[in-house]
Length: 618
Image 1 (cartoon, rainbow, N blue to C red):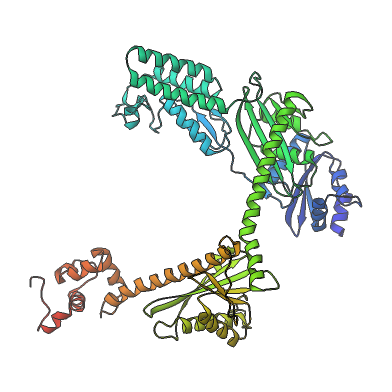
Image 2 (image 1 turned 90 degrees about the vertical axis):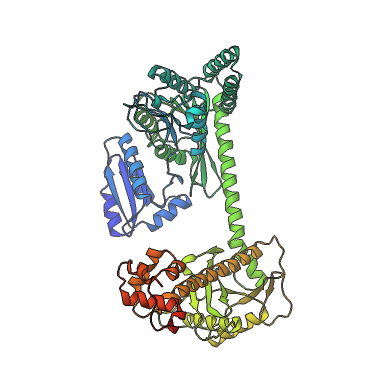
């Protein structure tokens, strides 16, 4: 403990507030305390801490405090500080985008139903949150089909009603913009949509059934069939929204946690009017060994920072000491909130359901991480074993040559680090010393240039040394590349990949290696080879296209960059320029008669046989 820490700890107040742990001026942890003096001092006493806390304390060289008047004020302050600074050692919500809601502006004479990311105090009604934008769009589509609500953004009513759009023609809008329905008729549809969003599916279904029977009695069978299809959509959504106790009318939030020793996963079930409206999961990085009550307490503070809690909030665990969470939730809701840890019965069953969701989400997340590692670092490890390396290659470079019959010969260098492309490290090469289509000599030149940079003592030109090099080609190509590397004074593992059978060739080895088609190492090799080929081809095409323009315009005397650009912008193509007369070219900005005659003469060599350049009328 340095002198700064000792002095600050000695003078800590007996007050609620927040503390900000720092390392070299950077905030690495934000915490709250009922008593700052006792809480902050406990970090630096000779007591056992969790591995995470021990690691954090080992980096702390300073701290600041912010005093608060109450525990609730400290909770709010901590939440804001965490969101502002996002410290490394705090539990952070992995997904901070905010879940979507359905918004209905009931003050509008002809309201629309739309997707919203934030709940605002604008007089509109909000429903949700939903598990994702896709779920919201599914509900919006169902609402618009069922209640024929408008989707346009026009401000209604219009002074001069217009022609209805296609949605009206196909029966998906009542066309208030065209005066096809009154405000009262449209309001009845909106009221039905609001009942539907509140979970009153049955009355909506009964209304649709009555409309269907009336249409059938009038022999309007096509309209009756459309209404029947809407009823089917409502039935499907009703079945998806049931929970264990549909008789419960209170809004409930059920929150549980799953830990695996490294990370945590929080699951939230949102129940409104006895029906589950959303299920959410949040990854909590680094929360795998913390006390579940402490983790969930921090999660609740951040989760409800921009959300309104339900009337009842059930959690799997709470901290041993009261930190004012109940008051915090009451403040956020603007009314009474019951916070509890269910021990038995139907409430405990909901906690178990949330735990199951958290367990499943954490398992899937870990599986994704496992597969990703298998295809990247795991593939590097396998490749190192196949090549016979003593350590796993981290930086792998791939090379390829591209040319067209020896013209505009180029090479590419692509870099993969830990099995993933590092595109900022990619490089192009123009072949300088080789004439014609000689891929062997070209590869020799490129590798020589690359490794002279690797062994250079000049920091301005020095490049990092690769762990492994892939050459796109067979034994001969590999030999030229390796000789160039050795001549430059470097010696790193290198291998070639022949395209026909995907054979791996090692320097000095007669037998090739053929990997299993499902091998992650083979997939990595193919990815590097294909990427180097793509990068070389792209550069070659760029130079070839640039050279084509150069050969036809840049060599004409008196035609500089400005005139070339003006000609191409005016005529759009080289073919159009060639077909243009001198008089046509004079219409281009910046062109005079001598320059127009020069372009015409260059593009029409046969005109040199004449005594004078033909005019536009010839």
